[in-house]
Image 1 (spheres, one colour):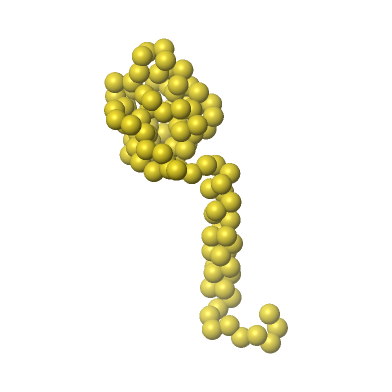
Image 2 (cartoon, helix red, strand yellow):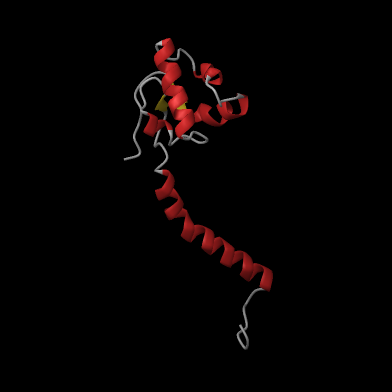
Length: 109
């Protein structure tokens, strides 16, 4: 940037550039991971693909949720998700606002 004067400092310019790169990458990252769920996901009726839209739930955890749901005939409480392999208290707290055991699953599409 020789000869070009910026109205702000180098650090601010670098921060703006980093922000721009992050924003430009965001749509491609969303496309790779699928759209997040638009509303609460019913863990008793959602498909493995719908479960994977939840924060921290990948393919293996989604399968584990579906398997446990089938074994026990469904979940009576969101708290029961801690019994699923790979879901601890911290993961449950991240999931809690996004899941339900009643009603329908709202799709992002």
